[in-house]
Image 1 (cartoon, helix red, strand yellow):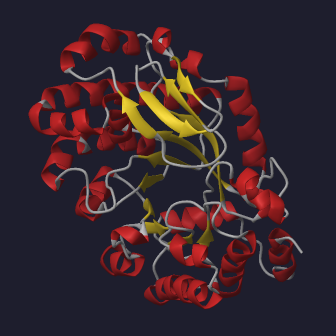
Image 2 (tube, rainbow, N blue to C red):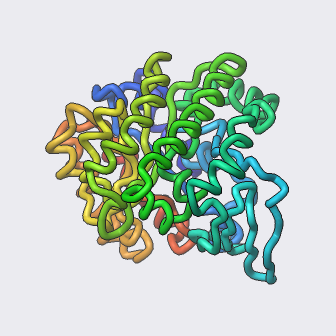
Length: 376
């Protein structure tokens, strides 16, 4: 029986509490009747693995697995130089694309993986100001979205009971995308004026975009913003650097959301523990994904911050990849029951996304553990 039907059958005769209500309560640091449930999945997971395990192409995973959250839009700073966009190189297995920022990335065609950074055009403040800044500011965000498609997705999602979000990249991720890691990291130290200028115009464009959606599509239940602040070993920059160069723009965008009464979920990869106090100060209500392999432990974080944050993720995907049911059970129930014992607001999910190396049956076992143990 599909997982969604199992849950529906289990809930017969119990008071109806929508997924939207569950997530809203958790984001306000209140405890509803159960722990929330969310997940992300690597692209091509059906093509590479799950298609042979019973999942049809184009399956709606949110409905299939009875998840609580659904995003209906995505925004990333549009490249202001479409004349630069092209295919640089291609094989049967991979492709190198250059975008409208003059940034080239190598990606697999038929399987998931982190894109390889190949080259970047915006390598100095002089190039930024001369060739990109004015063109970027001149972009009309209306021209960058399919408004009719978003309206259709929004109406369908809001008619259901899932917690509906608008999503997008923000300044730190945009810096990495446009400048590349090396130029970005050097410029955080050597060219702070350039970083401020870049973040200022990117923040303004984000506000223009979301204001357009709020006015012409409608308010979502919340925002899910992606800004990777760390890598496996540490954060990309120091807490002081973050407070000076990134926090002001987080405050500006998240404050705009709060002016509309909307909660904020912040996705950030890597070890971002040094920045949590600033993240709270910026107005974030929930942190996700808390990668276990970086040393992040949701139970330790909840002991310190459970009155200020909701937590989403931290189930170590390496346990799921192992296929060892005892290891999976220990990892999942250790986090799930531990968060319940702490009376901490928690949304159960992996510590990033489910890759094709996780068997469908093992992921469904992870869901069974939630179903059987999710009540606070």
